[in-house]
Length: 495
Image (tube, helix red, strand yellow):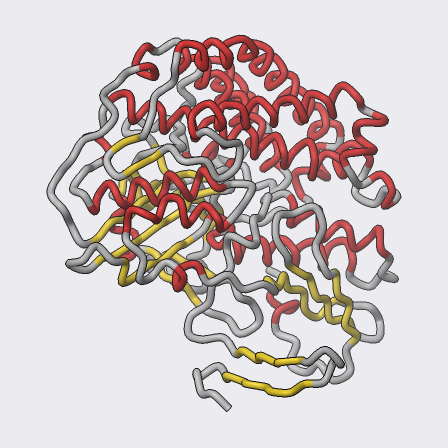
């Protein structure tokens, strides 16, 4: 639909406008626009400008270090990487997900619910709510959580406290709010004590209440200008997520489900260890982030979306009562089988916050989380693939080891990578609809950032490239003079 924006044949006579960096997202990215003399947009792209080579870093390390190492990909969603890696190394020691003890399985789930709750709360209240509460083109002084706290104090404080509660769940389970340690190959390293359980129970009802209020808030915001919110940055896409065996929303473990634009299931209950037979990644010269696609559909139309909108679209129901009631309301906002509105990501995200709060309460009342049976063992294997629904979407960790338990291969397909093409499509839709032919102003450019923020991208997690990157190292003395210089090009040749 917006292909003309991507196929500018000559850039010699075009003006270039850059948003650098994209703000209120995790990581570093920029947007470039190419405009002709009449300010018609000829090209719009989201560029990921940082490189993080974790797949290379972890080669040569023993596999049992992986759940701790890969957490350093991110300070916002480290638990997701911790658990995806743990699920992969479970397989390296011959343990399947169904083999875990009830205590180990539920402790991991509790950790993941806490992670998802705090991450979603951080994104909505701290990063996205200024746009939704003050307007996309509001004064730049209002586009921050401080302004929210000043003018919508109750909403801002609830967001801060909800995130804090999620972090406390993480701390009780893993020892630290950020980069703690819980999961081991075949299980976990501890369960909850009664004191830890009671500490978390004390505030859980308040979290459920505030989560319901948050869902009501986003429903009110979205429906206050429904036609606009339904269309802004909206694209029609395929959707991928994990799904429970009975079709329930699932964020820890399940089979892969993909629905197409019309809502038809084209892949269902796929064992995620077979992902490489269904998903490939394309490399493009202008971004460090790859472009995944479904092999059965092809590069052109096989891209898809992941994350809260995909999960709520794909599931048949949600297992907790309040979140399921909210899902039923959400699914009525469109006459189509699928909700394609990009801004509906925020609504789906808050439904998941409510689900997590309810699920945390259920687990805290389950005696298994204070159990003592923590680990199981199996027969060693050479390949392990762990997949989990991170807050931002489906996350793949794939490892191979040698006879000495050393990692020889690693491949990560991060949630934001799965959304890469979709984010670019949304940027192009906004550029074509709301910027084309107009005098470009800073408030107008914020519309592009609003589109990107709807996906809650974690750009630092998602950046890795095929091949080798150029590198230049300079040795500078105290006087600022370059005394030596070494340069390695993209083919690895040193000069």
